[in-house]
Length: 411
Image (cartoon, rainbow, N blue to C red):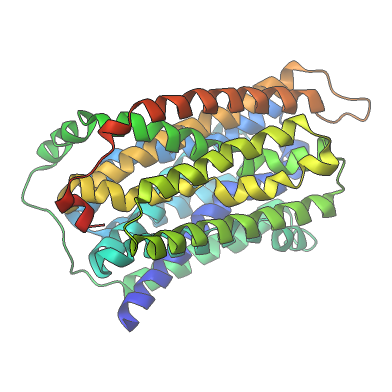
């Protein structure tokens, strides 16, 4: 038990850093816009580049997690992330900074899935949903770090110096991973890389992925895209918050995200004792998430701003699919199957983050040179409509989302 806690803690730290670098541009946006002369669309593209890099890396990541285990993969990738962070902090060229964000994205692409792989290797199956929830919720503390603490650091450092502080933390976590994570555990080295890639056709041919996946992708992707970049500007441009109030709003969102993810795992563990289908829990959480977006763009900001809390709490309910997918496809394919789900989430997050910036640039600035609130309303409304369509698609495929008795017993 003590070893399991240590292992989980180390992977929490790695995922926490991934969240920090995924979301830090939300609080640094004014500094980046002023220093590098960014438009809304270029800010969206620069920030979302990390997400598309996450997506590109997911399938090879799944292959190597299945064959080499989480320790080796995590160390190599985090060192790559450190290189990307150093390049980003030293550059003022938008193209070099975009390349650096790609490196950062690939480098942190395995932080969550390495933790999930460790959970499947070192915890009992009945504790996997809770273990995944603990890693993901604790990692969301990174959202907290990129609110008030980062704003505080900016009183003493430039944004580049602030980056330097977090780069130092990367090397510390790499060292902890090397020291405390054991090499042993279930890995599959019995097949060459090409064959392991070809095994993905088993996942792609299963219709359950094409009904469940899109719902997780559109909700998780919107959650990542909005919370890690556009929530901060929304508080400022639409709700009229000061910079300090924006930091407070982001802090509240972060606390909501942390508690929501943890509660999702805890609720799933409790209800599993009563044989409640984990996908039913997932569905309820994600319906709440979709509906919570509507008041943000429909109601006055004095009311709509509170719905960010619900949106933040419920947007990653899709994590409950990971033990379900592991049961569906088995341990040998689990990392590859789960990284396919992750891939879709990051692709959607990339396009939403960039798309919102494009919509904002289509509208004229306000008299105070802020982004136009109508641009946020329109982009959020379009996201909501797409989510409703995909939710309907999900419900049409219920017959393909049933596990047999043997599979259910492994959750």
